[in-house]
Image 1 (cartoon, helix red, strand yellow):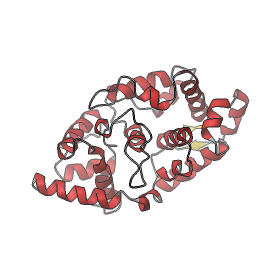
Image 2: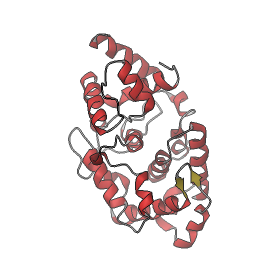
Image 3: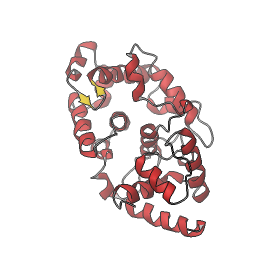
Image 4: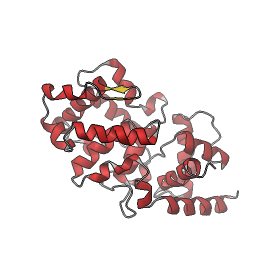
Length: 254
């Protein structure tokens, strides 16, 4: 497919899938239950963290996390004490368990009490067209509180060759505008042009079939190749094509 035809095709698919109907099938529906900025960004971060595996399971377990936080995530993060954390003992989503959840509560409390919140932290060390260093810095601060070594695997580091799919998805949710009712556009300190595509099985396979990606692994190097291809089609909002690539793979079995 020629570049012009490919861009036209993906523009149409992105337009088709980026609408409010998408929310009802996606874990992003959970942060859409909130209206306060801090509630949205905290719930979205936790849901994005467990966003692998069966989508119904992700939504169910994301809902469970909100229940355990009394449906007020920002209040719980800021004000919980150690004794409040026992409620997470039985929580589990695949390899993310209650001990991981407790660590995340403490790490988020540290971020909001001492680092200005999630937006402020992700906005540090960001480059004009990449957020890999910002994500690396975020992980370092996140795990500056006491934690189990096993929990570190639940926050990816792109500087260690991870595609960091879930964090990039989370950043898409926070940064891209909300005009179509899917993403939130809450963070004005970052720009859509800086975002990277959430590279997973669906987006990777479709990108390869379309000639946008020629690397077999879904790693940081593959993401850089895909990002460059998407930025060539739309340098201002390249990650809108996540909707096209994911939709083609997940819903159309392209």
